[in-house]
Amino acid sequence: MELLGTITELAQAFGPSGCEDAAGELAKSMLEEYCSEVYISNNNVIGRFGERREGLPDLVLDAHIDQIGMIVTGISEEGFVKVDSLGGIDRRLLPTQQVVIFGKRQIPGVFSTLPPHLAQGGNKVMTFAEAAIDTGLSKEELEELVSPGDCVKFDVELKRLLGERVTCGALDDRCGVACILYALELLKGEDLGYNVTVIFSSQEEVGERGAKVGAFELAPDIAIAVDVSFAMNTGEDPKKCGELGKGPMIGVSPSLSRRISQELIACAKNAQIPFQYEVMNGMTGTNADRYSVEKGGAETCTVSIPLRNMHTPAEVIDLRDVRLSAQLLAEFIKEGRK
Image 1 (tube, rainbow, N blue to C red):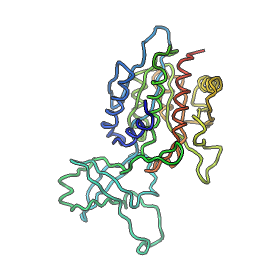
Image 2: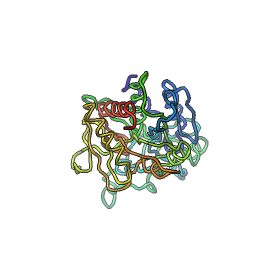
Image 3: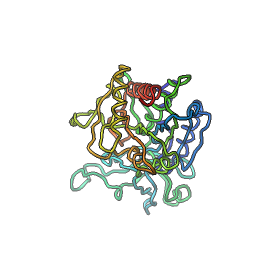
Image 4: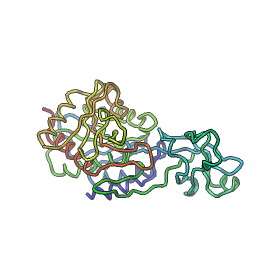
């Protein structure tokens, strides 16, 4: 498996919350390389990895397939497309961003903004009520191609930075999807300590909805949510952030299984895999929150990949963290329950 190519394909696939079909089908095709049984249920991509063995605990590896995006709410009389957010988009970056509207065909556009010379009251943060996308088409032309409810995404391609860092939109959480696929690559031909199911879940950005139904359907004994978390940036609080290139962030929280957290930490130490602590004082804001309380509940933990500029078109990760996170998952699965 070529990790950079896999992340590039995944990050550039279209899949805002509720419109995950294209990204889901791509992830399904990738998962079929490792799982004999792969299917889509409630927009979740689900695969069974390895032979099921009597007496082994059921382990779910979860990464969400959806991305932040926008939804069309209407077309103004002046011929601008009006939208609202799908997920927590950083609105500070909206002005002049290039986007693609997925109507009857793909339509490029750009968020309009007043020049600072004409703006009154300073450069305040644009609201979605004020936001308007310019496509170059008239109101009548747009009404033939665009309907309320159509989805919109930022028009960005993955780019390499120096070293092993890359930038793109949708790295949250397509790098988590790639991480799980890479872990399966490392586990090929190995004896497993768990019966492993993979789920690339839908609609995480609008309330972990895919994980909620997935957790009920699969009812695992153990679940690990593979997502992103905050990486140190200029002006950040180091107590609340990981560092790029320093390995996976292992979650420790009252809402998580202390036993699974400790086993992941011990596993990383034994395998000499660099890792970082992610200490939280309550809920995690990830799909782990759903698995821990759904149906009979599951022992749950998070393994997070540090990411800068979250919920923007210019998210940044380090590929080393994806590899190290995959190695940790593979070692944990090989070791099994102690």
